Image 1 (cartoon, rainbow, N blue to C red):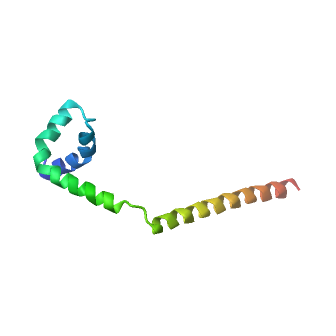
Image 2: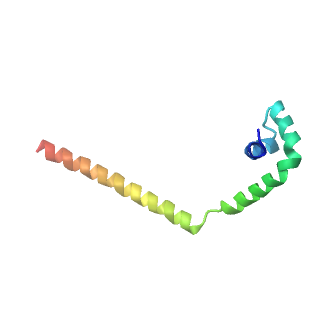
Image 3: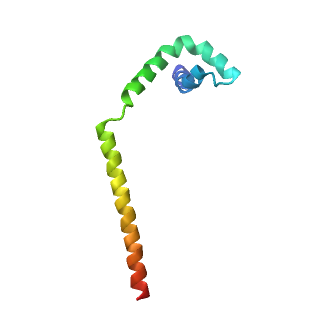
Length: 89
């Protein structure tokens, strides 16, 4: 395993390591590699926390999707009613 692969494995397991939810062998591996990658993991965690705050743009996109899906659902129901009336009369 090269250095990049070890770093990505460490970053993937970092949250579980902090919570103590890893198996013994994985905990040992994380402890061995902690001096090498801990700073990178903390930097990545702080960046994702800052990046993931929902903004007005995201909320407007969610609202747009709700309206769009609701209108498509209503169109489908109206089409089903129209087809039912058309075929029976």
